[in-house]
Picture 1 (cartoon, rainbow, N blue to C red):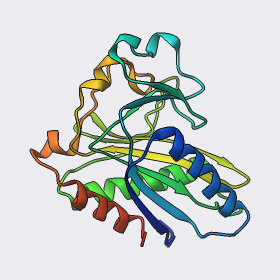
Picture 2 (cartoon, rainbow, N blue to C red; picture 1 turned 180 degrees about the vertical axis):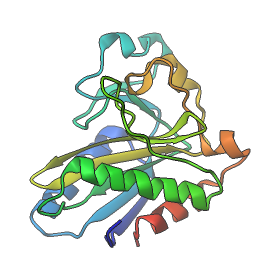
Picture 3 (tube, one colour; picture 1 turned 60 degrees about the vertical axis):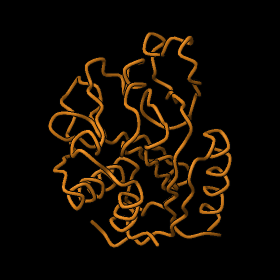
Picture 4 (tube, rainbow, N blue to C red; picture 1 turned 30 degrees about the vertical axis):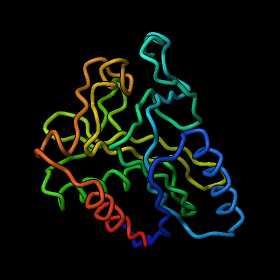
Length: 209
């Protein structure tokens, strides 16, 4: 992985739609070279976000009361909630670098972070004809979702790592376009997880300060 230090922004719980407004401003600033490459770490209140390819039958029943919000990132349905670490990456890509190249780097940095935290993990290549296996996995279960896009060579959106939150909302919809996916968390796999410690390790692995 290349040396790519990032400027770190940290927040606690931020409404998803308000976060999208701020992210758009950060992207514009990076496109105009008014800010450096940036990692924004935060969490969201309970919300499902859906990409452009999300099928109607993958959506949750509205009676559960969790909002469903369309988003401009790649990927399909994902869930955000307290106890999940979200990282938005506003990074200017190199002249011969595409967003898929950068997603691979993001996966590897998150694999490394989980290793530091004592949890073996891996990224996966997608077999031909299969649903995208983008993200990070441990023991056959998915622990990090990733959905990104790039505009004028600047990335936006990012990753969501399940740390110690309630996993039951994942069972109310079809996550990542995969009906059989088993979503897990650091706390489920290791028995405990300190959110502040996880956040600090992830920031370190992204060279973010």
